[in-house]
Image (cartoon, rainbow, N blue to C red; front, side):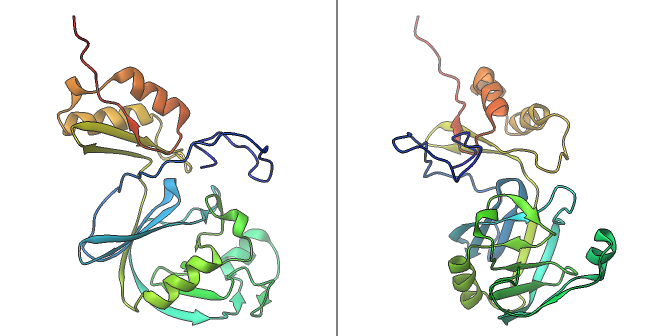
Length: 234
C-alpha cells in the first residue's frame, strides 16, 4: 500500500487522504504444497494441496545484506528464542558477538522458524514497522500475530522456495495484467527488457498496450495493472 500510494513515511498520513488499495495480487509461481517467498514484493505465499491458503507480508534482508534465494526445508521451530549474533555479522560490523535473551529487546520476537539455509529463518519481530522493507540481516520477519499463526501451522521439513521476481504477468477474464515491483537488490539493469521477454514467451506482443507497460515500469506500484490493448472502433 505504501508503494502503491507513493507514501514516503507511513507514520505521516493525512486524515482524508484517499488511498489506492488493491485486493488482487498476481501469484508469481505455484507449488503443490509449501512456502513461496518472493523477495521484491515482500510477500510469503503458503500453499496446501495445490491451493493458495494465505499471503503474508514480510521484511527481507538489507540491500547490503541480501536474503539468499533457493529451495529450503523448515529445520526447527523455537518459542521465545535466544538471539546469538552470527559470527559473520559480528565480523562484518567489527563488534563483539552479542547474546540477547528472550524478551522485548530480542530482534527475533517470540517465534523462530529456522530454515536449512545457514543463519536464515522466518521469525517474529520487535520492529513491526520494518515489515514490507529491506531491513533485516537476511532473515524474513513477520508481524507478531502472523508469526504466531504460521508457527502453529507449519510443520518441520515443509518445503519452501525463495525467489526473486520483480515483474509478474497474468491472464484473467481475457485481460492481461502486469505487476511491477522495485528491483530492490538491483539484479536487473532493465525491467522493461524482462517484461518484453515474458510477453514474447507468452505470445502476447500484439495484445498489450506498451504505453501502459511503460507507465507501470515507471511507477512500480506493486499492484496488478491492466495492460490489455484496447482496439478502438473506427
